[in-house]
Image (tube, rainbow, N blue to C red):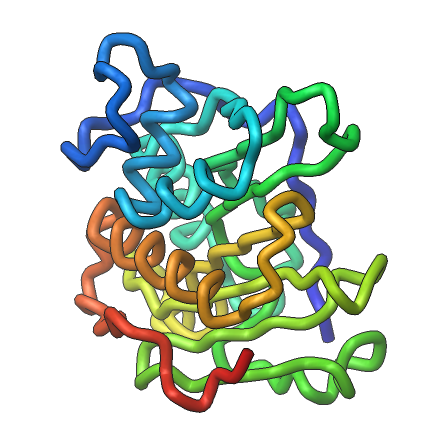
Length: 230
């Protein structure tokens, strides 16, 4: 049974920890916004190039720091006990919009990380509302990729990565029951490729798992499995 998730819009906003020296484009570092620095850190240089070539006037929102996201995640996992229905808080790690006059209001690319509302072994294909349209890809013993239409259009998808991420002093079942989840929503770039989105999502999962210090050292692939088709 799905566990309800609450993600307060106010979140926790703080400067991004210096976890990456990558930069997007040729703009001097001191002139880039905090939000742009954050997206570069989690998506990498190629991910930022992808965004900046598909958005007329990229505009980046302030993020949650990796440190704060890690603290939220670890605290919630430590508090987990079997049967709990906690109010999980996810962290906005990257959000990009389009500031051009031709852009539609409300369109954005958003990347969030936090405690999953599903256990790692959840059978997504049996989920009633999207089960028949869900694609599940096993990407190793520690990683699972899941994507489906976002509910408003079959041309727009949301992409999820689930990572077994161990937390010190947590319940023995937490590795499976409350994994780390990354969610990438895109109704802005117009890119229809699942492989492209999952490539950038996998990169961010590696960045986040390293930043979170997962005790089980999850093995996250660097390439999208060949079973993912565009």
